[in-house]
Length: 412
Image (cartoon, rainbow, N blue to C red; front, side, top):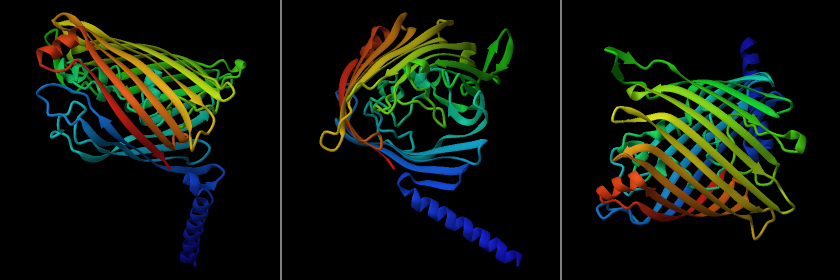
């Protein structure tokens, strides 16, 4: 008798899941009851790139098809207290953007990108644990699938790796590192007008030992982070939120947004550097009839990112971006034009000169069904300057180039 009951329970649950899937198959949503549900998604980006000249020596491929991302993503809720999310990515990138074959890189691999749990104790006090976003700036929180510029990955478009290895700067692993295992305490006050984040994270760059004051040290502390965001809801703007803490570059006219944020981070990194970061940013989007403009700005000051002649030096990163969307269907989708300018600078990085890189990106975007079916025709112009330019010239590499790309994105 007990066995029959157990089987009937299993069968009932299976039927409920199938019915839940059938009813919500468009969104891949499973509803078990009012407080228990899960959303499933598959996401991907494919692109064609026309590379500009990189150097006289590199056998680069001027025309190149690339699958930058393919993901399986689930988010859901166990009950009214506990939520979860997990994001797995399969990567296929056989060559670097500088044209080098990635012989030292496993060309096909699947890995866990983000996984975490939320504990919703109260609107004013929530806890997120896992491999999650580091809440320092909006740049760290932005969604991989909600970008105005489809090719917007600084760590890849530092083509000659000036800032991520060639000059021992590694700013992509410090100032622009966006995910680590940790815990974040966050919450809203005044209906979302104020949102705070306070986090503790692993220090990923503390694996080596260093000698200081005659003693052998091992970095074994935590990275401390904090962020405060303000939204003037009294003016009709809506606060931003997502289950895993990400933010989009545009909400495509679905809601008016104005968010002003400030953040701080502190960790000890290699060579005994006390890396501190200070960030400020702002984002605005408002629908005016059939026109949806948005504008975003961010600045990150990163202290002690590298050492030159045994002296600690700083880095800075800032950007400004925007998009103009025509919120009416033209053909089968809605057209938009987006642009972004960003600068990375590291002090005295080469021959006592600051290393700089400027990147200007322009994109013609076509939203067939929001970000779920999206096409982007883009241009990326990169210029290395000052110390970075001198370093590249000394190594017979191009210090300026312009790439073109066509990117298609799907989410289902």
